[in-house]
Length: 73
Image 1 (spheres, rainbow, N blue to C red):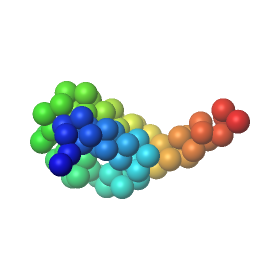
Image 2 (image 1 turned 90 degrees about the vertical axis):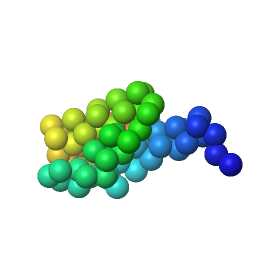
Image 3 (image 1 turned 180 degrees about the horizontal axis):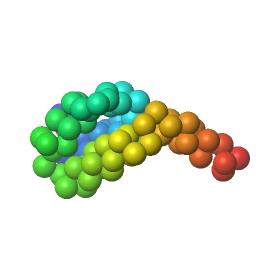
Image 4 (image 1 turned 135 degrees about the vertical axis):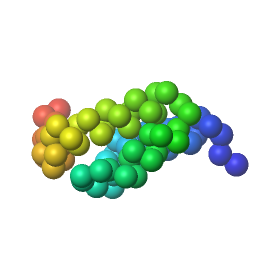
């Protein structure tokens, strides 16, 4: 059985590593539904931050994040 902490970690990983799965312009239904139904304020903030980035950066979010990965090499 999953603990609340395990679920939080799993959702954080999904929102970070697989953000393209939540990219559904113009209304971002999955991300908005997830944010609305979460009880953890930190996860709600993560959803809102990703939503804000989607709205402000659009598809460029994927290019900028991938270039940031290689800047550490």
